[in-house]
Structures are given as structure tokens and as C-alpha cells.
Image (tube, rainbow, N blue to C red; front, side, top):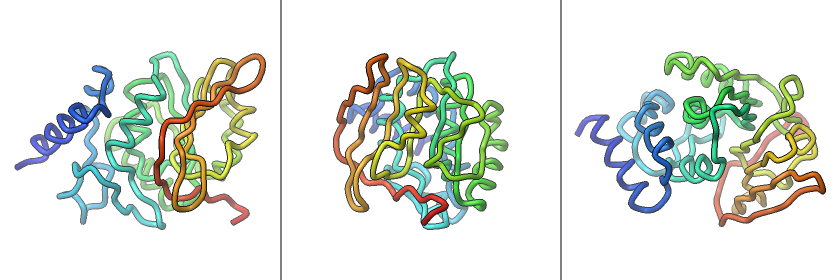
Amino acid sequence: MGINEDREMLISKLIGEGYLKSEKIIETFREVPREMFVPESDLANAYGDYPLQIGCGQTISAPHMVAIMTELLRPHKTENILEIGSGSGYQAAILSKLVKNVYTVELEPELAQTAAENLRKAGCTNVSVFEGDGSRGYPPFAPYDKILVTCATPDIMKAWKDQLKEGGWIIAPVGGFYHQELILLKKTKDGFEEQRHGGCIFVPLRNERL
């Protein structure tokens, strides 16, 4: 089978398993070529539903996890989103079709460069990649409508909370090295409300102090 058939099989699987629900997100999964965001040596596995190594000890998340997080984020065309952990750029590419702007921060210089190049090739003109410590968020474009964290964090960082608009939310895998829980934290005028959305496993957040 070819790439297009592999993509359609994956999308059908994710719909059937309940991971993909919104028509606009389903169409985005069709539009964004995941094969452009995986290493050349893994092109044959681009539409397998599992994570793939992308260098620097990092991975591109399994498609079902990208679907879960994107559906939970409930993206809108008017929103500015901050992503913590660019990886190879795939999650940012998905979001680019659904929101106004994506600002994504990556600690590893090599990955930041790769993500920027992948996004450029994929025609994602509303994504800005910044090399830096994601635990500090990215103040220049704050406040953000929503923040998506694509690496395991021991806590929801204060910087992220401070850079979030009232009424917005943060989605992050919170926990230790081997297991996390996907947390949605909503900012209200009185503080924060927390929702829990099940277990997951992500590579850990790294910062300049580690």
C-alpha cells in the first residue's frame, strides 16, 4: 500500500477507537503529511500508531496521543497557542490548521532546527519555533489562549499559569519518568480547575538546569 492508503487506514482506526471525533480535526489529520515529520529511515512506519525516535532522545508521539491532546484542546481559529516541546514539529503542524498562531519552544537546538524546516516544507506559515527552555514558557507572545505540553512534567509550571489567559487551559502529562496522567488545567477568575484524562507516557521535560 502507498502513503495515502496508510494514512486513511490510520484515520479510520483512530475514528473507530474513538480518538478522532471532530470533523475539522479528522480533516486536519488528512491534510498534514506525518511522513514529513519522521526520520527518512522510518518512512515506512509514518502511519503506524506508535511513537518513533526522532533523535536527541526524543520521540514523535503516537498518532492516537496527538489525536487525544488535539481533541482535548478544542482548538479555534481565533486562538494563539503555546506548545512546550516542538519535537519534529508534527503536533504544531496539526494545530497550525486549526488555530490562528502556534508558538512552539524546543530545548534541543538540533530538533528546533529540524522542526522549523519540517514545518516550512509542510507550508505551515503560522508556526514560530523558538529554541529555549520550555519550563519558562515563552513570555514575548503571552498571554496565550491555551498551552499544550508535549513532554512529561513533574508539575504544571508557574510560568505556564502566568502566561495563560483567564478562561484558557493547559494540557500536560504530569507525573514521573515512567507514567503520567494527562491533566487539563483551566484558569478561572478564582484560580484553577483541574480535570484528569487518563494515564500516558511521554519523554520527560528537560530544562537548562538539567
